[in-house]
Image (cartoon, rainbow, N blue to C red; front, side, top):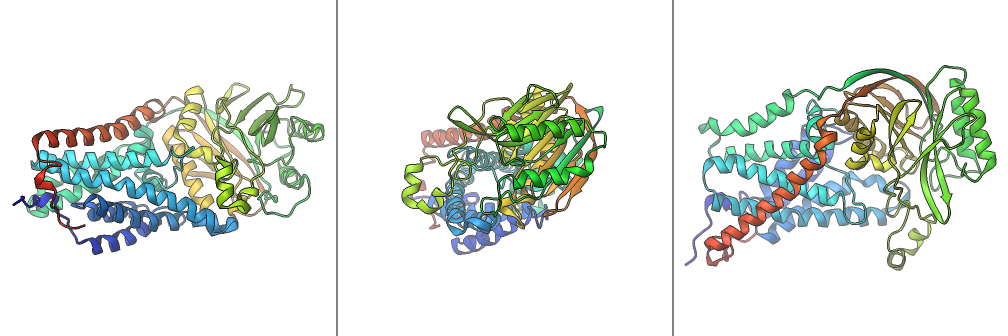
Length: 523
């Protein structure tokens, strides 16, 4: 007769209740992000997920993970339906749900395998939460990089942009912040399972990690003066489905820029898609930018779709009066699949030909650095959703960025949570790198963000306007900018390797995969 699973491996709750908890937990986790933005709910949402996975079989973990993932993603990215309707929403949220569900299996295995091989209370309170947090982080990293360029939207760490915990990201990066949050929750759960208040010493790992999150200040970067930046939100008809005549977006930007002309400034910034014409091939547009640079008496940082040879790029350009323009340029490194290009177009045209036919341009990924030098001041760049990718941000910092400019076009998601969620990314990037961020949109939300994540200046959404801001400059690299990739490799690959090793050792000892584990409680 096979042995019953140890208590540490048994489900805490029946499968039906775990599924209900997952449905609630996904919605709770979404509420931690803007526009609700109640950041402590991230801990509660994670707890709902982990409680349902403890003691689950592989298929039970898939079911719990699928319900949690669907509850979270179908709410979190509902803004996709604003213009594009339900099909892309179901497609993207659906594939994220599948990945979330598959990534729940390793978490359930960790709860099953580690206590069997390392049954001590110390291992339950420290090693198990660390492994669970690492596997959660590994799932985030996988979903943020595959398929194609991935979709790193909804990372736990990004929910903390307005919390007192965000500063830890300057040391560990956003992935490290995710790890610590999940560790706190997992360690607290193990403390409760091992006796709770009857065993107060057991709360130490969770409490220590929470103190670390709260008490560690942001890594200090060095004050390098200020930089006077003009930034313009033209509120032009920049969306796919906006009715417009040729150059309407350019005219809207020019009109909104007028109040700044005559004011001294070091740089004038326009958003992504602020020019609906290619200044590299259109002499009329180029002449307009020349005149504007002379009138502003400052370099322009503008953006347009550009063509070079047979390739089309989403390009940010530095434009100077009397210069050999563009003086410098940067092409978006990760065009958005199904938005700026269609991977495997032949396949998706078989499924949704009407939607795919709307995407006429096929943007080519850029290979140039996300950095420009403006008269000796380093400016890091990220075009729209490139702000989601850690390596783009870290690269700019390592190249010498003293501030960041994030140019974006949110016109296809007017009046939704999308721009607020993206703004949370921008705020976290400021904290992570210890740099100011000028986040400028065609239609909003546009803000200038200080290195500590606070707002210096801002414009209301859906209104034309301009800002002229003394932006703090910083030098010096945060640990996140230097070792962030190593932290991700350690947490992601390290946790996977540990789980594989646990499985291998368990099989050799006959405690995993053998007769005793074949009969498990259902669910």
